[in-house]
Length: 258
Ligand code: ADP
Image 1: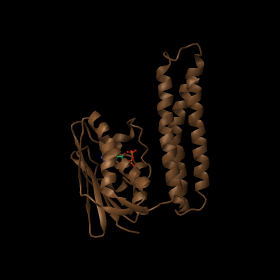
Image 2: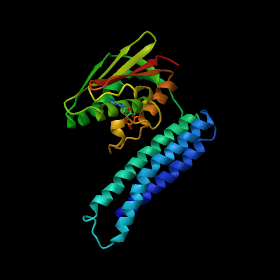
Image 3: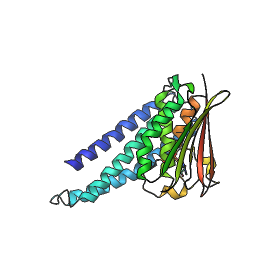
Image 4: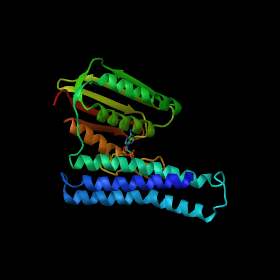
């Protein structure tokens, strides 16, 4: 029952996702070629988890007499791939909607330092578990106009990456300050860094560094393209600096008002 439920859930999510993504593609802002490439890449990325789920389910059906304990590895594989697919479909929907201008940005007055403190606090436990020192230096009282949910999503992407690509005993630092036109914030890490030849591509959809492509950390290669979209929707800029073996920093500049 568990397996059938998980499978059905995953498949329904994917079908619903593709249906919505298809609908979202109607009023197109990006070029037709890019859109086709996006659909082709998305289908390709969905194939891998689907193939794993299908093969594991087939193996499970071969031995209906076995207990859940005996088959826990296959069930766990199905579960992991379903989760991965869920994340992928939700990221794809965000991007498909942003392409077709269906994603609303609601800018309201917001205190940037408080938001950064809150999200950093949410990551504190994960950092501790991974033996990474997470610190902040936040100038107080920075007012901007921004979409809180989207800005939160942006921070989650950057902090999640910083923790993901920094080994144990490393450091992650979050800072923000006022600038003449608005505000800037930075997420810095002492992780593995990004190869110089990869730097121009990190914001591309589905781009994943060589080392991480084969790993099973559940990444989709879509996080930074979503991050870039969020920043641009706020008329801001995002910059990456990285030294392989030393670390990476992402800096975001946000204008104070529309
Ligand atoms: P994902 O993390 O799912 O692979 P992203 O779009 O978030 O996708 O990132 C794209 C690629 O950029 C990653 O695969 C990784 O190679 C590189 N990257 C992103 N953030 C960092 C970081 N803080 N340190 C090192 N590499 C990073």
